[in-house]
Length: 262
Image (cartoon, rainbow, N blue to C red; front, side):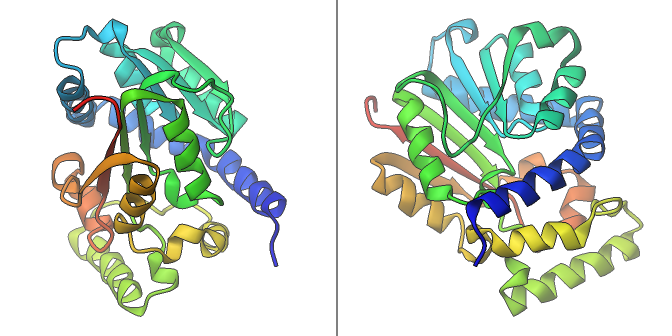
């Protein structure tokens, strides 16, 4: 049976090697219309939670920042941004990508499952494509809830990325996606990645076999958070290329509010 230390070692090695390529993906997003799309999606939801508040008074924690996409666009909007990632090479790329905005972002190397912040530290937590990869996702959600202020907002964007390793129907969908990529002549997002290494990690990740976002809602509700999910958010945030690559694995949004305000 695997140990947490073995899983962590393999994960860090994979993402360290992936950092340059993943950073290029983020740079492409920053230089395209995706920058505006995601800026709007995040700012609108934060504004609804904090009507009348100026952005510079709102503290945001970006967990699993990777090459820094969320942190950068949030800093541009004037929020107080802290961005954490477990992998040093990802943080190096994030600082490079941030450029002049880097001075507005507090980058820290930290475990998403064991945050070093005090209770009630942040108004907002954001995350994208992280929770599926965690060894103790329930523990992570407990930590995220802990560091949120009363009335704080969690916005977690993710998908059932590797459910096809456990589910025959999902596997069929994954294969259809690969066929449609060729048929439509779009770039394959997995090109240049070590698929066997990633699948080896994903096979051991607990959430690869979970039914999400239902799982997330149950856990967050158990933590006392008011939770709702949006399984159609992919229609707003994904490009045509992303839709073709991941048609069988649509992105969802888990929105949760810590008790304290309506």
